[in-house]
Length: 483
Image (cartoon, rainbow, N blue to C red; front, side):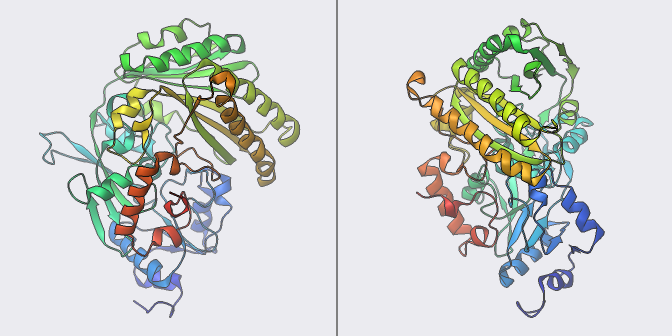
């Protein structure tokens, strides 16, 4: 290999036997256009490197670190934070070819299978492959999301109440470190790195394989139900009631959101992973008059394949966690209605936009189940919570710039309300979900001082030159979190 500085990085990659795409290549354009968010796709790297194995990634990382080249890491490219999985003028390390799903028999677990999954795989493909074997994993709920980013950010799943977050179901991470070494991090070997990767995002290395616990994949019951705006107050009660009773039925799942459609106040997504039809957990929801429903007996594979967000839009996402309270839900509904009207009036009067206000239960049973075995810091949550996400999707960069302050103001208004005298001053919960957070937020800090200090110690141990803090600037970085 040529000495650093004596050749271009593109030439060094090719000399190392790596596939490289330049802006003049047709496939470069294809990969750029395959990002979920147009916000991410607007950054143009000098080149894209497409490894096929951990050895390829190791060679690429050595070239990048020796030459002090800036780079980004892309798995599925579903992130919405600009620069998280792409970079302007640097190198994008595109893991899209690391997309396998392989069942591993036994592995010393009393005959229980495990699953090796490439970080560039999409969850719809993972579930479809496992469905043929009668298996599932506790993974993503949206078919187009990449495996790597979701798991490294924690990963809320349909199985979280019973089995923990996606990261809690990982048995081993294969990781390429900043010096090019390939290590296998497990609970027994490199245990500190194993812990840090469960929620610590892209701060430690490039994950090239994720071995997950396999679960039996039986039939599930679920679907999407639409409700008219008149039942919104009762739906808010149904949501908070469900959240407070998750411990009674840890196999029933719920997502509820307000769309931008005027005639629909709320949408509920039910997924009962034990296959119980009309489970008692949904009693209050099922008693509400609905507009339509497609609930049926199905499979996780079908549910996830059918759950995909529209692509081709500029994306704005903010998140917050709040106490489980109907007043929080009602306030969010009111603010969301104001946001939609503002978007219609001053941002996208043609109506070509999406706006969602999504609530997910985050009860104590979920936060207590994960304990201290991951980096998320959720064990500190002492109250049943609601995880809130506001999403706006618009067609152009100019519309994104106009809509952004309105979305940010939405979440700030929610935080202000939750901390108001009306809510007793304590309606805010600290945790922010890194996979939903905007770049102005600080989700790593929300893990708590103890966890941040531990994460920084792991970073210094495995990346003493701080390559993943400096040369890989995208995403949420530990170096930017004050302690």
